[in-house]
Length: 97
Image (cartoon, rainbow, N blue to C red; front, side, top):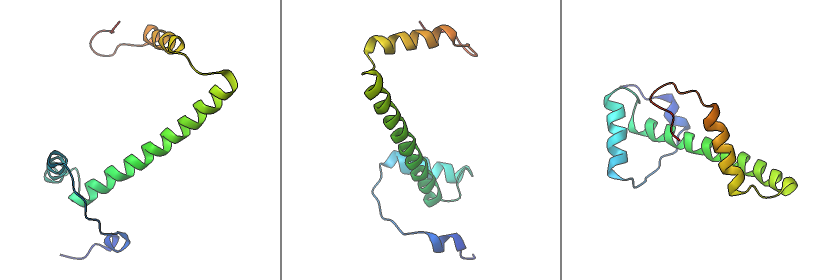
């Protein structure tokens, strides 16, 4: 088996994981959805980093908005949810109230 040149760019990591997460990784490898457990974990870490980066952008946006317009109230949040539900297009199942 040839050595994968991508491994030269990797850093070895030892980590403890929950058994169900390891089982999910092994299942993904067995099903061909991941090349290896390491690749599966690496992709999960990449997605988590991307998510945290996006959340940080949203946090800065809302902080700036609230600094200019005041704190968003629970009533405003309820109104926004109601507005979104009323305009939602149901593609499967029924609309929840």
